[in-house]
Length: 198
Image 1 (cartoon, rainbow, N blue to C red):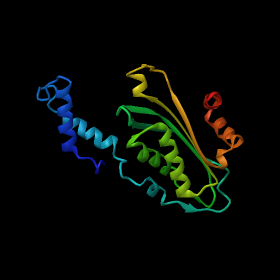
Image 2: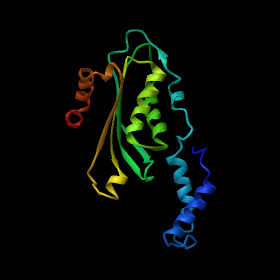
Image 3: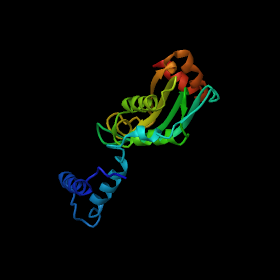
Image 4: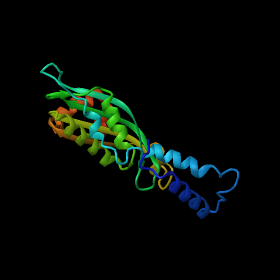
């Protein structure tokens, strides 16, 4: 975890940051903070440099018995906004229409986690998830819906603590509104109403 992260450099940078805001990084209260932040960053950014597509390498060939749709919903999502390095949290819903291959269901949350564990924006994250699944499984269609609350919206600036951003990324047959409507129905009416207003 966090093999690309230089913990010593992060700790030194945090010490400088604490000094820059007028705090004493050597105080008893803050003495261990730089190292704690370095460990946290190693976790938050463990996806940097990771090839998320490799997580789909165990895909298995299937015949026509795959069913019409695979949907993994309510995947816990945590990432760090690249603009302010503040967290955004929420849920990912990932659907695909299988063609020749399917993958174990736990691989989908792992793809989400790997791509989220790097400096991100929600819009790009959804596109990256969709493209990774499209490249790795060559399905007939992919649909990714992300719902998240953002620290940069809730904790600074406008301070909208209840605001929720919803983004949609699609490929293939699931780019068609009629196909998307079926997935939105499985996710519940709120997603459908939100995207209708966009």
